[in-house]
Length: 520
Image (cartoon, rainbow, N blue to C red; front, top):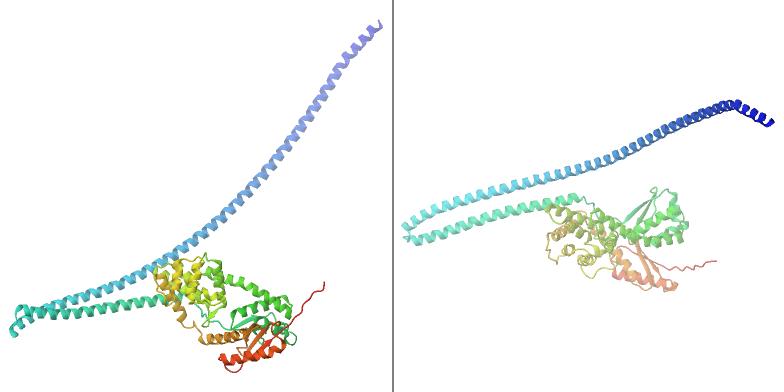
């Protein structure tokens, strides 16, 4: 009975609590749903804001990319426009040259027309002379028949002979006048062509002086170059073979020597010593020896520069080295590299005017003195040796023949060979091309050095002070201190016997011993 009452009571409580539980459950569910909706709305708003920011960022990047592409496109357009303007200028220049050539051609045609008119006038004069001769023939025939009682055949033969002689004389005069006119025109055109080629080459005088000027950063450097009691300047002169002249000229140092190579080595060595700041005899000899080794590279650069200025490519490196050595070679007082460039320019301009191969004449003109760059003189004429060297190192037969044709004993077979030979003679014989006094002076100094180096034990010999002094450096192992005096007397005696010189020459023989060791 109690259990039934308890069950009834529980059921009643459940029935009463169920609506309450249901009410509160629905309220909690509604609250959770409202919270979820609010979070969803917040999430949606955050996503929208993030989308807007990303959209703006993408739009900004797109705009920057478009601006960059536009700038690049404008730069390319500007570059192409500049190239187009340059091409238009080149075309205008070519058109102007073409118009000038057409004007020249018109002038030549006018001259030819005048010559043809003159020839026609002469032909008409000849026709009139023939008509007059026929009338004279008829008159003479009648008179001869009356006076000489000649037969008609005999009179005709006599008149024919006389007329033939007269016509032959007139034709000879006509041919001579036409030949003289054509020769004058050809000479005038040749002189005009040569004058234009020389003018366009703008050649400076190729004669070199025997002095090199060095600009110093200050006058205090002069004292360091001179050294204590002059030991530094004596070391420089002994090591390089040049005269170092220091006077009152501000910030200036002079190097005197007839040999351009010695002056160049001394110039580079002194500039490096000044830059380094250490100027003493050991350093001077070290720097001078190093500069001598670098001169070969400098000569190659000089050859490459000359070929580049003339627009010549694919020249063998050996030829460029020989060509660069010509920068330090002189003949008859002119620099051989400058002379070669001048010949190439003159020949190239004449070839361009006449329609010949400019590349061939320029290569031949530039390379025609190659053999002068060798250490020992060739046993044959210089241009013949240069032709063989050029052919050996890849130059064409046309170039080799044009070089060889410069020699008087060779016969030119091509127009290019004739132009190169003519250009070489023009360059040699124009005013200012040679300095015979300087050439004689250099030959005298070279003779003095040759005499000194011909003695055993002599290492080097330098003619300095304009040939007033000969400095002779000897090997200490071969010449003793006692032998130095005898050697100087022997050299002086041979100079008196074999050389021609004004005044007197001081012969200084230098023997030096050095002992070097290292403490470790």
